[in-house]
Length: 341
Image (cartoon, rainbow, N blue to C red):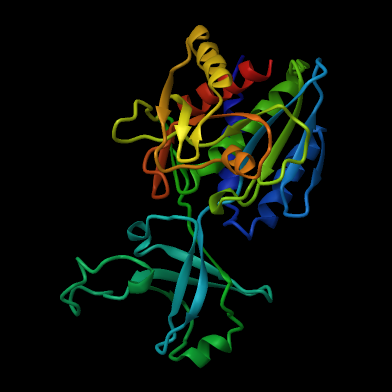
């Protein structure tokens, strides 16, 4: 199996460049649909905006896989008297990493305004606590690149509470194979899944079973796959692997999660994935994610009777300025194909 490296890189950078926080994913899904249409797979959109793809297999059974295209973000909470914006989080970004980041505010009327996310103690020459003020939503704001000096000035721009504030992913793929960007959770897996679809199309090889693949749009807020659009017995979530204390995963591995905050994943299916990775000589890790939930978690909480498992490329600094490596993507891609074939 030859990993389609250039296709993967091109797709990944294109997807990362499209702002898509949970609840504002339409443009990203349109692009995903264009990729899937080009590959020739049947697909449709659900009411909540998930993209469902049918991949014919050689068996009678159907298995499910997912990756989520929604990301972290912010929304306008209100207007401050000096013409800056307060905000509310969408998902769980590490807010100190956003201090000084450039952003865009998307209005409901089609206008887009640029700005900067800043701590309220903006200058060390002025504020004694500029270095140690807690970076949280209470102590941060968005400064617009507009001549606004009051709340009314901001209102006159057409900016409303609930308008999305999207910050720059700053995506880079280095010559040494490192992938540095925000939102690798989970756009890295989205690109891996698309690379798997391309492999099936180019090679003429079919999966062992029919596959229902879903790109979900509300995973970061907990209900991405709370409705299953297909009748399956087992479902595999493709999402980022965690790196940190007591975990063995690195930026070069495919991670296999045995338990997260929602409880253990299916023992038999997880064991099968471990055996596939081991027998194929993949660089892999088996870990527990203590503060994590997935699309499979959402489906199980919704009451679906499925065997669930979770794999993904190792990603460092999750929900901050994330980093992985092309080797992790390739190992995850190979394990996904081994599972499907």
